[in-house]
Length: 570
Ligand code: ATP
Ligand code: MG
Image (cartoon, rainbow, N blue to C red):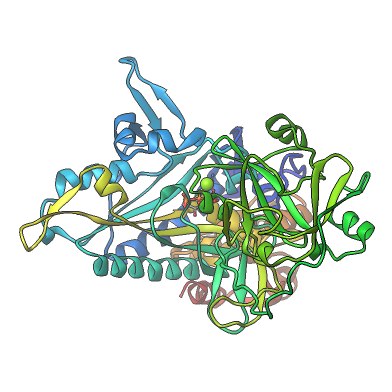
């Protein structure tokens, strides 16, 4: 492609709303343009990068034996009524009516539609196992669309669904997808981890997330240094320390004035105790009802664990005003005693002795608080977020926390959908049985953003070769010079003849701005026809990633570059 003819509007300005580097660089590099909140047009370069991801995903899904289909993006509400998710899914599901006043929604995921296909088209165990997938635009009315392609409302997903006769088969299908996903992200040239995950609104019993490691990731992973254990902190189980059982209560409950001491640290300092001696009480709204969550003062509540402990659909944190409106309780002075709302305590809290907690009265705390004696929680369980000083739940080794971007998610669904929607097949014993299902998603457009989050520098993007919209950029630094044009065009044509994706910068621009654009766009190999050609008949090859340059004689330059590209794709 000739740069002079390409719709490639690079800009120097960074949009003020672009908080993360992938969003900034995708806009500055002319890859995407915003239509409205959470919805983007892919300009030619953005679309090329997207197509690169799609190509790899499609190849590996086909290799794994999955079959590509394409389902409608608009889905009838009736199907969602059948699965029970019409009520459950919440405001991320964009619902509307057609002219006949029938309910519809924009597909955020396709379990219902594919289960309907299965119950109509798959009658016998002989047709199983089968895995159907599609690559398609999804719509989720995200509460906070942000970070450009990372969390859009409209985005491109690869979603796959497997149907098996029994659990053993479903496990095999799951493993096949686990391996395919590992190949996909490795082939994309990304550093990633597969981690144990929470199953969320999709439902099901078992799941892994594929996380691209990047500091800007919205998820936190915990990784064991000693064994293969890796998990999302939303899910990572806490192994209780097997310290000696604490001594019994010594102190009587007492009320003390702590004016203005709203934070755990302040209260602890004032009362001369450690933060770990304070019971932290937080109020959440679980399916519309206020609940109190208790953790040790030096710990954090993990809301996904809270949601699971309560078996709730949605758990929301509340502001100080909201807490007051809901409970008439003063934030900063909350405690577990005499509450008339559900109280959920972390297991660790139950081991605390002579602790400090809020008195539920502004300006007062209690000392000598003893769980079991002074209050009895309604639910006790694993409620807090794992921390770096916890031990690996598998091997007891030490843990590290790392940020990650979720690019893929695989679930064992079991019979959740097939039972709700009466999707059955006839097994070899003549019995009608529900399909055992699995579902597997990849955020195809998010992969493009994640690749940039992981691979960039101050000058711009550093695309992994497999995802680069162009693999090579040929810079002609003398676009008005006949010889330069002849040489540069010759290289451009010969590189393309090798099957490479080549951008030819034929613009009449200063060399500096050509170099800057090439760096911004992140094209892995830059081939410059400039001064060194004039002087010694050589062209300069530069690697975007390493910054290393080499001078190549014209003869053999194309074969050399093609070799480097193929090597990076192998
Ligand atoms: P998240 O926790 O990030 O909202 P999710 O658990 O809702 O993700 P899934 O339902 O598992 O996501 O969807 C499959 C994949 O689709 C995710 O792994 C992610 O890569 C991608 N994805 C989900 N929501 C978005 C979004 N709003 N924008 C872009 N990609 C998304
Ligand atoms: Mg989501």
